[in-house]
Image (cartoon, rainbow, N blue to C red; front, side, top):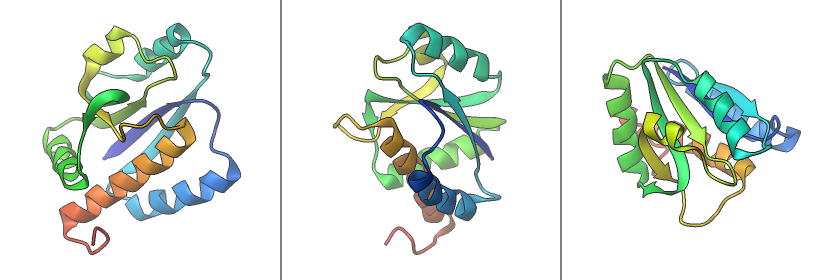
Length: 146
């Protein structure tokens, strides 16, 4: 399934690119990751770019510190439901430092948090890709989760 991750900020720095790249390689063919980086200028500009990136038929998951937390197994069940839903594309939106507009919240089928702590965007990118990989391994019965 094509998976778009929309993140505020610039492209991955080299030290992060290697780590993210490893999970992307492992996910290849199951969840093909695409990235869209948006300038972290302000909430209005960020939201406008995000809204233009979302297409009809996308399953949108908003990552926001006020969202619901899930265990890795719960997240794998969510990923299973997304793939079974017939959605053409899975889109993760990493919320900006000042949140996102209500229009994006309305488009999201799920709002979730990776932690009760506030995390930097670069770390969220890595954690998200790792959790997508972990979910795919749980679903296929792999040993990675143990």
